[in-house]
Length: 272
Image (cartoon, rainbow, N blue to C red):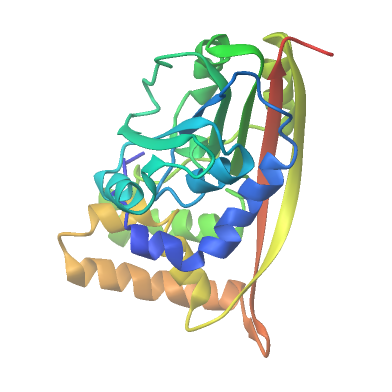
């Protein structure tokens, strides 16, 4: 799987829809230990949802980590600094494939990032070890790799025209595990774990809105590989656009994008 380059402006075009699952995740996170609490946001992107953490815990010292210079620049420009509640927002470069917690945290949280991290289950023990007693590890990931949005992209990339360039760049079917796998791993590591799924019915508007959505996320590896060849990029996008139009037809009120996500909240220390 190719490490994609990111475009904050494209990602934020659907910021409202993308932020809602993070709010749903935080609603299940209990009070944090620490005075003030320390929070790590893994895969913080442009920082817009990291800022939501400061609204929930105004005195917290929060660090957002990401490996995209463009995303970090956006986050630093818009959100870094002291918060009105006496806390702070920091942002730092980190590759989650090798990230080691530099300090104890009351909360380690990740919003739609772990699907890009091969072998992320193996990182859980070290991340949980970094939680202070009573701390929480919480994450949500897209859980729709089998949906037309991704299946059609993979099928197109596997055709003779594109296979040589794109055959190995996209996320694979096991980039996200089943809810039972996450529950078992977190429970065996001594956590009180809550794992669930939600399917959102996003109503998107505008011209080819599903293509516009996926340009900000799942299509980034393709756009990265084909970025130096605009003719090839446009040809792929045109073919993929036509497939999406058929799979997600427009209605008088917009285009419906069903989108399933997986959530996990794990409290360190077992049952209370």
